[in-house]
Amino acid sequence: MSRGVILKGNRMKHRVQRSGQATTEFVTVMGLLMLVLVMLALLLYTFREYGGRVMDLVGSEYP
Image (cartoon, rainbow, N blue to C red; front, side, top):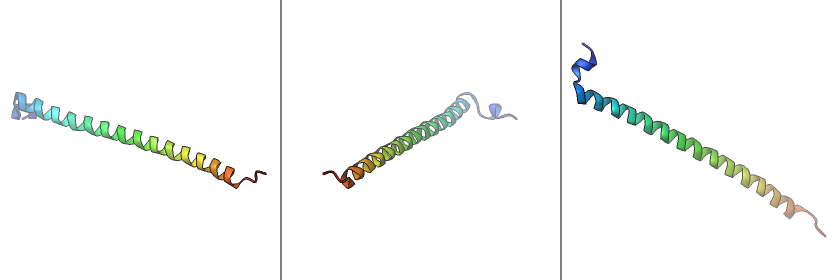
């Protein structure tokens, strides 16, 4: 017997909908996590560059 025969109408649709919801939530959370990681990497790069400039200015011998 196929699953469609064992699980009748609404129960089968409900089960498929839950599985799709979990997948959608997983993909959404992973996308947001990747976006946050990229933003943090960009922020780290920017502040390191700015820190290097500040150290160059502090270390320069200006008369």
